[in-house]
Structure formats: structure tokens, C-alpha cells
Image 1 (cartoon, helix red, strand yellow):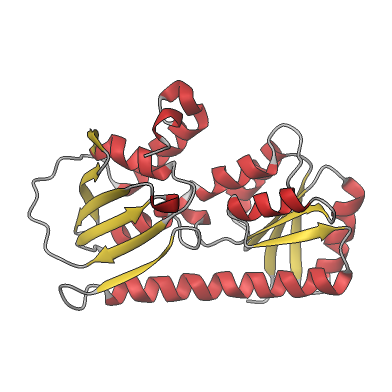
Image 2 (image 1 turned 180 degrees about the vertical axis):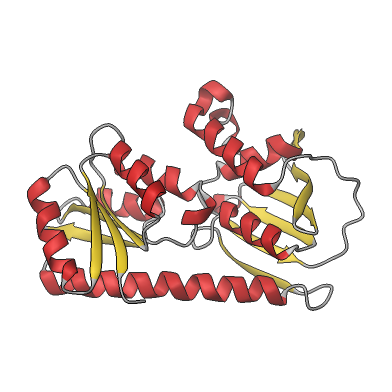
Length: 261
């Protein structure tokens, strides 16, 4: 990769200029945005290799911006570095809970910035390659399993990759802090049935939207034959697009009330 594309989102234009100048020396092309809404629009247009975002942003805060990005399959492996004042310990810890790969104190040192940017990008590339390889291998024989934290690989990315590779099996999700489980049954890459163990009335599409709202947890995929009758008509892309729309609307759409199992 000759050039890394980095999106930096901060309301401080001077800081954005400093970031751009520093990272240009690492062969990074830096796209900048002054607020969360602009950052989301540029991210969807450019699909960067890394997002650097301030937690306190106008129009859309940094945490909401990252949640929006994580709901899109193409951003499942894009790492995020949050920026927060060096004395704002609670905010920096909150950044990790929101899904940040790194938290950078402001003001930052040049060498620390450059080192974290390079390390974070390379870690994201490695994670994507390893996950794709594990999903590909999972079809080698029935009963093969692989697992990991949803913080590293979000549900949107998992479903997109499994659809692309035509996987058949059961994807078990555990919500954060062991609050409950959800199951997605896939055949040839399509979700044919989904349920949530503590909410028997929430099934199929609604169960997928419910699990998309979980802020973390873990996953385990087992390659097995799935004989269930297909109960869902939407492909992964349509499910994820509708799930993202519902999360945008929040409690008004009923998703917020389902976010706790």
C-alpha cells in the first residue's frame, strides 16, 4: 500500500492542519471534517483505512459517529483512534467502551501520533485478513468453529463476509456482560432464521436488528448443516441497511427499547 487514507474529524481547524502535515510524512492522505455529520459523509465517500475522531464534536458527537460507522459492513475492520484531553480519564475510558482501538491524549506528541497511526492501521489490516481466512476455512468440514470479540469484528462485517463466501452454519452471539444470547442460522450465506433466547417473541428480521444494537459481546460460528425452512426474505445487505436506519431513529423505531436483552 503506497498511501494510507486517514479521516480526521475535529472542530479545531488548526489541529486538523497539524495532523495533516504530520501524517503526510508517513505517506498518508488525510481527509478532514469539522463535525460529526460531515465526518460520516466523507467516510462513506472515501472509506478510509483509519478514522481519527475527537469525542466532543458539533452536530454529531464522536461516539455517535463511530456507532454509525460500525453499523456499516465496509467499516467493520476500519480502526478508530479517539482523541480526548489528557486529563479526561473518564472520556478516554468511555472511548474504548464505544469501540475505539486507541485513545490519544490531547495535546499529543508527534512521535506518539505517528507510531499509533502506523500500528493501528497495520493491526486492522492483519485482523481483516485473519478473519477472512478463518471464515474461509470454516467451511472445510462440519463442526469447525471459530470465535472472537464483536469489538474486533462487528456483526455487519461477519454477515457480509459469510454471505460473500456462501457459509452454512450457526452464528451464536453473546451480548455484553453475559446478558443473553442470539442465534443466526445461515444457509449458503443467507440468514434463514434468527432468535434471541430471552425474547422469544423477537425473531427473524427483528432479532437481527436487536442484535445489531448490542454495543459489544462475542461471537462463535459453527459450520453445520441447517435444515430450517427459510423464514427471511432479505439478504445481508438489505438487513444491515434497514438495521442502520432503525438505529438512526432509535427508540422511536423501537430499537432502543430492544437494546438490552
